[in-house]
Amino acid sequence: MGKTAACIKIIQILSCRDIVSTMELSEILETNPRNIKEYIKELELLGYTISSYKGKYGGYKLDKRELLPSVKLNDNERSALVLGTDFLHNCPDFLKYSEYESAMGKVMASFDSKNELTPITMVDRFPLSMDKELLLKRYSIIEDCLLTQHKCLISYVSSLNHSRQHTIHPYKLFVYNGSWFVLAWSELFNNFGYFKLNRIEEIKKTNDYFSRIKTYNEANYLDEFGMKQNGDFYSIKLQLRDLKTVMEERIYGKNQHIEVIDDHYINFSCDMQNKDMILSFVLSFGSKCRVLSPLWLVDMVKDEINKINNLY
Image (cartoon, rainbow, N blue to C red; front, top):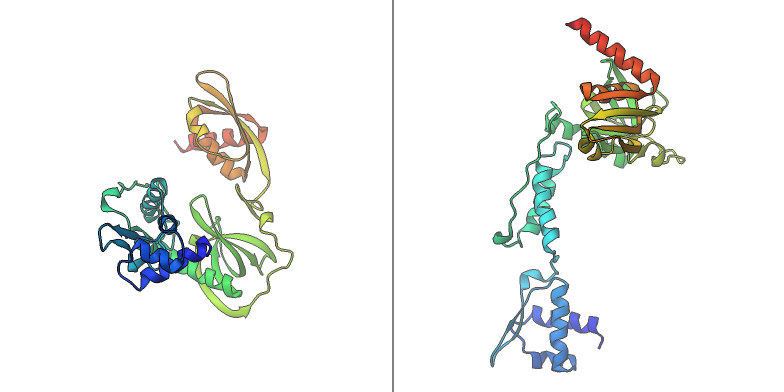
C-alpha cells in the first residue's frame, strides 16, 4: 500500500473510532509500526489535528471537527491575514467587506488568542463623499450586467458637470487612484470609455443583451499605470528640493527616473497622462518644484500662478 493510500485509510479509521493504537493501525494497513508515525506526521502537515496518547490504552485520536484538513499557516501568513482584515475594513474601495469578514472569521476561529496581532490603522486622507452603500449598489448592478451581459442605462456627470445618458456594455470594474471605475462600451460615443462610479446619478439594468466584441483586449485599455486610453503620455522633467525620500516612495508614471544633484536637489522625470492632472501634480509641490521641461508645462504653471495671484 502506498503512502497516500495508507494516509487515507488512517483517516477513515480514525474518523469512526475514538483512540486507535499504533499496533492496530499497523496490522490493518499491513505495515511496520514505525511507518505509522510517518503517516501521522504527513497527515498533520496536510492540516489534520491528530492527538497522541501514551500508555496501555494509548494511540492516536482524530479531531472529528476537522474531517476536512484545515489550512496550516506560518506566522507571517497569519500576520498578513489579521492585518489585512483591519486594512480592508478601513478601505472605502473594498465593497464586499462583510462577505470577506465572514470568510476570515471562519479562518481566524482556529487562531490562538495569544497570537492575535494589534491591527494597523488606515487613514484615507481624501475619502469619497458618497455613501458606501450607494456606491455598493451601483457596483452590484454593473457587476450583474457584466456577468449576464445585459446593457446598462446610466445618467453620467462629466468632469465639466454635464449630465448625459449612456447605454453602456460593461467589460471591467477596477480601482484607479482610489476610485471605482467601469470600462464599458458606450452606445452614445460608439467607443469604449472609463466611467467613474461615484459620478453615476442614476443606473438601471435593461432587458437588452449585448455581445462582447471578439477583438476586445483588456491590455489595450488598462495596464499597471491605469487607463491607457485616457489621453497621450507626456514626458516631464522637474527639479525638486528636499523631496528625494518622498519621490522614492511611489511610482508616479512610466519610465520614472531620479537623478541626485546634491544633498537638497534632485531631477525627477517620468511619463504621465492628462495635462490638467500633470499641472495639479506639479503645483502640489509648491515652491519646492521647478519645471525643466516641457515648455508647455512651464507656461501652464506660470499662467495658473498668475490666476492665483489675481485672486488675492
